[in-house]
Length: 64
Image (cartoon, rainbow, N blue to C red; front, side):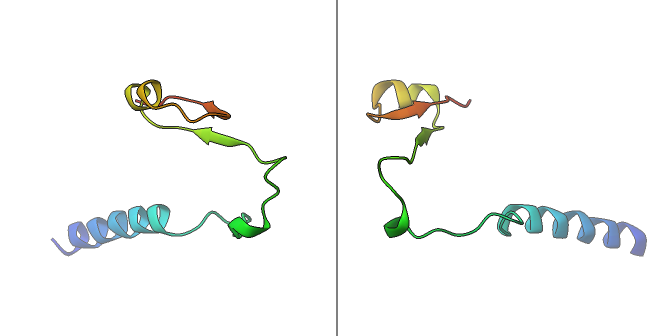
């Protein structure tokens, strides 16, 4: 029983770490520091939402 609880806690810990911690090596950038001309906007909303309400100038990659 103790092994099962430890395994469950390990799985939950890994899920929380992957879900809520930043990706290593990717730096946080302020929106004020972004060059608007060279930046690309990627729209990854559901197909139904992105089709009905498109974002002008974005690259659309619909996800289910």
